[in-house]
Length: 225
Ligand code: ADP
Ligand code: ADP
Image 1 (cartoon, protein in one colour):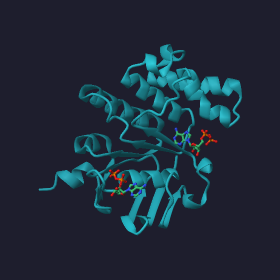
Image 2 (cartoon, protein in one colour):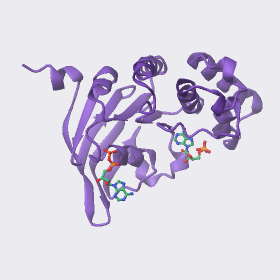
Image 3 (cartoon, protein in one colour):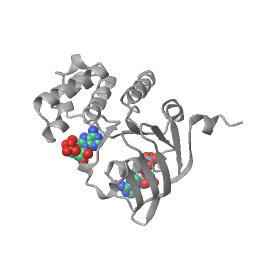
């Protein structure tokens, strides 16, 4: 668990600045949703926190440590993507265990973490299946399982539900929220869907054209007279 601080964060691709002087403090255990129209810079911001994009200027600190100076592999972050990014040739169990094997955890520890996560996500009966033998919702649970087993300080979600049908999207939204509350892990969730943002977020960071327009609770942002 960790607080995250964004200070005067700017991102340019070549001559084009796509994020301008982003500021924000995210509290330990908070669930923040970054919301805004396509192209406003949501993914870029999330990817910078993940260490998948360089920072042009400014600073990102997680638990007081400047992350733009840390190797991505040293950042204690797990990301869940919309396309699941599961390995098709591996079973669910192998998919969930993979990142832990690389970190050289013992077999017993890996099995314990995988089975605990599988119980939380109710996918224990699918552990020996391949991703193609699962529904979209089940695959998304596996993708979350892979993030949970890492026991990270921070979860990052990049439009994780946008490939699911509307009904499943609503159901998984509630599940993600419950899961995050149960685990208490500081989370940043990117979506272009305002309803999703309001349902999920403790606070919403509203981005537009690379600027932070608003940053507050759903009530502060939408219930003003
Ligand atoms: P969002 O996630 O809100 O849709 P992005 O962060 O993907 O927005 O993109 C923000 C802006 O940066 C857009 O104008 C996009 O075209 C541009 N952009 C994103 N990635 C790159 C890249 N690798 N090279 C150049 N421009 C990019
Ligand atoms: P390690 O556990 O040593 O980071 P991994 O193979 O799990 O090794 O990860 C390799 C790289 O990919 C690291 O930069 C790690 O942060 C990143 N990574 C792996 N899995 C995820 C994930 N679920 N979300 C975000 N980043 C991940």
